[in-house]
Image (cartoon, rainbow over the protein chains, first blue to last red):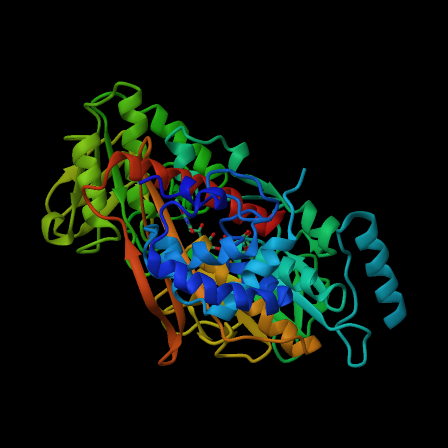
Length: 113
Length: 425
Ligand SMILES: Cc1cc2nc3c(=O)[nH]c(=O)nc-3n(C[C@H](O)[C@H](O)[C@H](O)COP(=O)(O)OP(=O)(O)OC[C@H]3O[C@@H](n4cnc5c(N)ncnc54)[C@H](O)[C@@H]3O)c2cc1C
């Protein structure tokens, strides 16, 4: 129901289904080798809505998330366990490598202030 | 000459970010130069991304007559009283101060494709290695019988944001209870497919809020169907019963003429005399500069290579946003911003050999129907079969919960803040 607030990484584990957990493990391995520079390029698609300074103006900030949680959330949109259709379409075309690169990039950012 | 020009540009840029321009981009010059025409979602985004990501290796000059940009997107929220003009007005300053984009606050008067030069309104020419053309739309003033440029203050269009938007709101706020508003909706293709219907919603909201529920909005549409139709009509029925009458061509039997002197609209079905307000949204083409440069086809819009937004007419030019023929992508700010990032990547790849990746595009258009009741439509797109093709799309459903609609409105506000920071921040 409250699809947006549930995005927050601290709460991700509650609604995530078993199917997501298995892909989660695979992705953590990718994240270790992920390329933040590639992630920065891919992030150009995210910043149209998610402000890169980390301010929350109605769309949850995604800067500074731990990489594993970032990937898990994207995976749960890809599997459509999370319901927001905008994020389902975005995550739907991200490969595991791309998710890992994005996660690695966003993990390096800090919210302004 | 070369050194002089470079020094001059450098100091001008350092001083204020505002350029005075001289000689053309020359072979052997220190840096490749990109000139961008138009500082909207297409042009501002392209200028920022090329300048920022090339870290000084590419010179970027943005040609845009306006000192500040008023967004058409969320101008309907201004009409409805949800936003102020100030909240939809943005400065170009950060493009210059943070990313080194040189601003030429003038209109481009002509493009010389053979010489690879842009002539500005003041006569100065600037050479380019790559040109980005993102001038938005121009209105076809002869597409509505009886109406023309001379009448836009009487029957405003407000399809380019700014004084027209302020005028339309003033006129809306002056509509008396029981007054009739007629909107002449545009034929396809046009800027922002759900825009006219979001506007109807916001007009009805303002009237209802002012207690003028006997006022009526009549939409004379040349189209048989429109974007998010079921969602809008459900919303109008729920929030504004009896206030909105949408008419397809088989109902109104064609728009015959408008008479600005008496504020009259005549259709094959009925004549609306002495309307309280007539909002004429005419047919549209790509911005004039693109037409004059021969970048458009017979449709009045500019064909592009879907894999990189390059003009089909000229390998040194990229056309973005509303002016382009972007296949399944609607003419929206979101689309223009998405296309600009693809073009920026490809242009940098060509000029400074930075890595490139296959183009991917996306779009979402949110529409506010009434307070906390927002719907959306969107999708992702790729180059396929010679066009930008939708790969996956979505649209809100009728009967959604108030909670979901409220969350969708929060998203709408968040998107606006995000995209304007992405363009100008
Ligand atoms: C009422 C309304 C509501 C809308 N709502 C939404 C929405 O909710 N979401 C959404 O995504 N989109 C929305 N849109 C659509 C959106 O505004 C446009 O699709 C978007 O602005 C297109 O960007 P652009 O860069 O192609 O052109 P524009 O934004 O039109 O920018 C073009 C710029 O080029 C400049 N220019 C033109 N000619 C020249 C020249 N010769 N020399 C130099 N500069 C020149 C102009 O001054 C202008 O600043 C809405 C539009 C309207 C009218």
